[in-house]
View 1 (cartoon, helix red, strand yellow):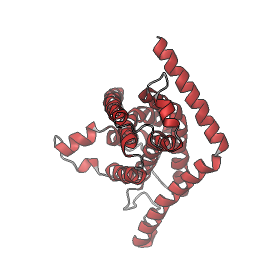
View 2 (cartoon, rainbow, N blue to C red; view 1 turned 60 degrees about the vertical axis):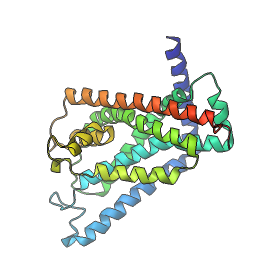
View 3 (cartoon, rainbow, N blue to C red; view 1 turned 90 degrees about the vertical axis):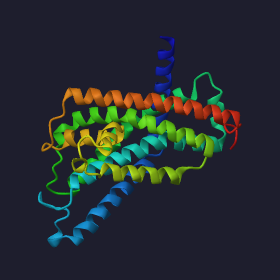
Length: 274
């Protein structure tokens, strides 16, 4: 019980820290979202110019699967922002010297990162909806249904724990290799390629289909499409519970992997280098 109370206090402290960050640097957050918005709009506009009569951005019969591209891109932004809240801040703290102080505090570094991820989750979900709303207003006749927002919040909240497992791995690599920002951006854009992958084209029972369904980020993309687009099959409770089990399992695997990497970094005296 005491451990839970202490963890909740860390979550509260990290939440206040995140609120201060948003209050002091609002332009940083908004400009990041605007930059992400422009990237996909440029891609869609470029594809539209290649289509007859500009069909790429308008009409339900558009040859471009705009809904999948938009949802996959917004999910990639969600993953990128969540992951940078862990490994990116570890890199900054390593440079400023506060990482060593954090690592010798009474709380485990892995626990502090988990509390940081949970406290930042409302901001990441809000950013997801701001970006998705911008595309919904910019592109006509999309199949996205705004009224399903509560179900989307539930799917994103569960997906976040799958992201935490990946973020633990990224954070552990940051402890050892320090500057890995561009490498992680490459990995995140590789996730975008997975999100845009056509799951229906995979043979049922194949390894590719199994891996796509077992990996929390791609599984989250599948459920996200079912939650947002009315034409897709209805999202049931059984699917959500199974998905939650997968994401929590990934969090535990990522947690213990990070603890192993942290131990290795301590043995090599890497936590005090800045």
